[in-house]
Length: 157
Image 1 (cartoon, rainbow, N blue to C red):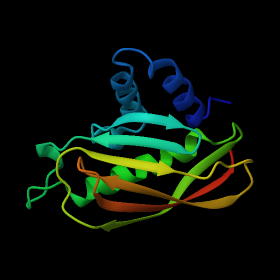
Image 2: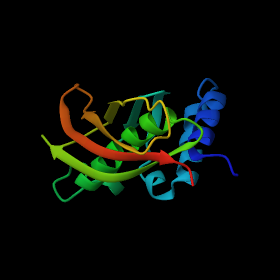
Image 3: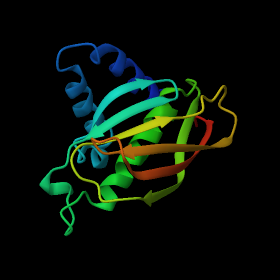
């Protein structure tokens, strides 16, 4: 059986995160594993069982007509943070799939946005849904959006 995605993510984070340019290399690897998410140009700052901190710099490709970061880019960042926090904590015989994703937008997002997530740590591959939230903050620390995801954890097939 091939390595589970969470095993690859965990191993590569542990191998690369402490190296010079390691977080940038990890971001590139993550973009190869999850191509659509790679378009964000997000950088994982912290990652551990049930915790993820991910940043995304504002750039033209992510802007909307209001000269702020597009709602879909913020939603994608929220999904990334919740998914990394939960998947990093999964047992080897488990898998997770996103079943619901909602976002509350509180103010225009400009500059660098940091998504912080604290997720429950599954103890087994038992079929169960987990509610996971991520707060997205701007450089001043104000919450610009809140992502609410439901992930279904179950045994790997």
